[in-house]
Amino acid sequence: MKTFNLSILLSLAITVYCLPISQVTVQDEHFAENYLKKFFNLTEESGPSVRRGISPVSKKLSEMQKFFGLQITGTLDSDTLAVMKKPRCGVPDGTVARFSTFENNLKWQKNSLTYRIENYTPDMSMSEVDDSIEKALQVWAKVTPLRFTRLYSGTADIMISFGGREHGDFYPFDGPDGTLAHAFAPGVNIGGDAHFDEDETFTFRSNAGYVLFMVAAHEFGHSLGLSHSGDPGALMYPVYTYKNPDTFILPRDDVKGIQSLYGPNPDKDPLQPEPTAPTTPDACDSTMVLDAVTTLRGEMFFFKDSFFWRSSPQSNTPMQSLITNFWPEAPVNIDAAYESEELDSVLLFKGMCSLLWAFNGYDLVRGYPKSITSFGLPKTVKKVDAALYDAETGKTLFFVGNSYYRYDEATKKMDRGFPKRVDETFSGMNGKVTAAFQFRGITYLYSGPQMFEYSLSSGRLYRVLRNSYFLRCNNF
Image (cartoon, rainbow, N blue to C red; front, side, top):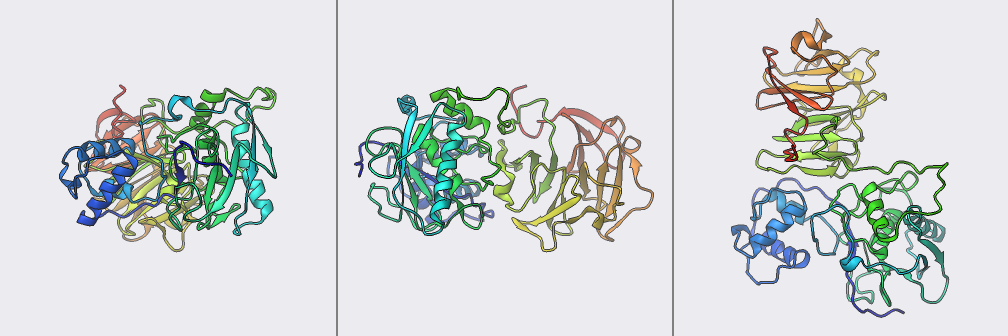
């Protein structure tokens, strides 16, 4: 059995989105202060004074808010507390960056590594565990010179075990949920080892529990020398996200990180290129075309690929997240979205399948997804490009190609006289509307990378803005 020398606890946890918190209690203040001590190196004892923003607590709160893309206030607010209360990784958070490595670029000094599975979880068959572990290691082998050989006895470079609570490494697990696993940076003795919390329910593919492949692939990133990434789309982001093991592709951020340590895979066949690694959208990309935009209970949501940015009127920094972390049953790469005041829900439209999803809070509304023809749209309409709810009239506009339909939310019927050409109502809009929403009485239509600001009642064009206007990008 390996002995402990000097290493860092690394762990993984599922993301849970909390509803807004009405007020911060003394208990919350104590919780927040302990959180900052554990993850942001708050060393001075200061009592329950987090909310009042007293230094050095205020400084550490600002660091935490910056790391998670929150509004930097240095005070404990409901959004900050909600992030703190998400089950998460046990490694302290550091520099806000995409991929990151351990101090001094700690790595293995060889490319041929061994691993051994010491015991098994009863949640899965032995063959399923074996397959999950092997595939998780191959995630990293596919993009580097690293090669992994399994041992069935003795001491391997990466020792893999399942255990609960106190399990022999001075870092006890915390029972169901919370910390799912932890691993140690490359090195001798316990270095490189990965431990999984036996109090969790691990699965082969099902999202009814935690997919062992996803948890293990993340942990092995630590075993190979990667720390956490600030990219919410990265495998090395410190929260758990369900992905199908059969279709998983290592994101670009993780590829860059691991290749900064070990270089690319020299055995890659140039005639059989690997699938393109997914990249997290950049709010400062002037060529980006947003998929959809909507409001939701006073906030703005900007969708792109598998992600959205969430912006509140009180915040100067929109927070980026995976769509499925917020709505697990939602589609990705959506085409349109709007907030229905009648349903108190947000509706998401998806592509050629001609379906829409409705979510109240975080929950899928019963009876959804359903066909877009339920609105009265003709069967010839296979895809909605954008949707816009007008609070003043109670009407919703559906943009399809160069035309738009108008739906009465009260009567649940399409208005007569539609579709109409978009440019007949909105002067200067000559291209296809790709996203639309209304905010503070002003209508915003996106066409490609540009955003057009209108008066809906008159159709008057006020100005043309860049697509990142509400995303507060400062790179222009």
